[in-house]
Length: 328
Image (cartoon, rainbow, N blue to C red; front, side):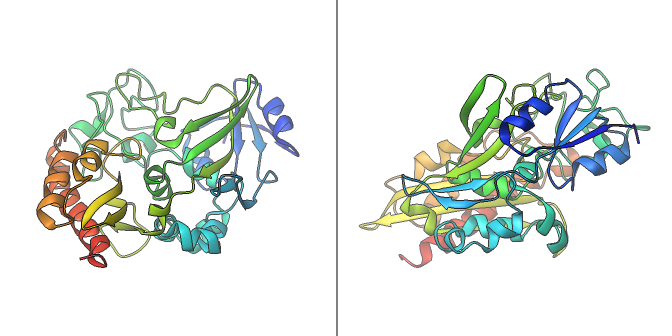
């Protein structure tokens, strides 16, 4: 492992000041970053430990919920307000990783975790444009069962691995940031970039910018939400496909709906065209099938992941059908 400096931040301002150098990285629990350092994928010259920053989970003036970036995944999943008002978020977190990792992992680190693509992690033996621009993408003609089908490019087909982010995307979550140029807020769905021909640029964060919190808006629909994850084994596996969804029915018609997909794209994927198609429709299977077809209409597959569009389509329909059940 390459030698590095370590500093523990006592404030957001101190963290941002400490990460001013180009080679600095913020350290949450390290459940992803430390692994990448051991593998030689990451080699920061300085680690700024931000686990001492806000872990609070508290109501906002607008009736939503503000979650500090240093809050553990377990604390969020077990929070009474989250379980009652945003159940898909609790279910998504509990479906990811082991209990030990969830106890350590932070909200900020979960959002910024990097892909688990085998070729990305294989520093010595594989080409990867995300790890080293210009190397090529060995996943294109290699083992790509777990890779993306939406938003991918000829330069990269890796996916974002987070379960938590899929639920956050469905809920219109806003990410609070602090940096050398001040504070700003970015919708979570806009935080991660699509790869295009620059897959090494993964987010819209400016150099040294810190995630300080996420804000869940107050919306009645989020209480009627769920998360379903399809994976190769019952536990401790990343999603082949996942769906976070919420549904609100009034007078026999769909009044509001949220859909977000995981395991299929380089970022949490929000198929807004499918949502728009469902507004005003009768909540029945034919409408859900049509919306799922729309959500997957732009799929690009490789031989190893050609099953994913149909799997995602059927998972969307199953989740929406379950949510509609209580109203039918």
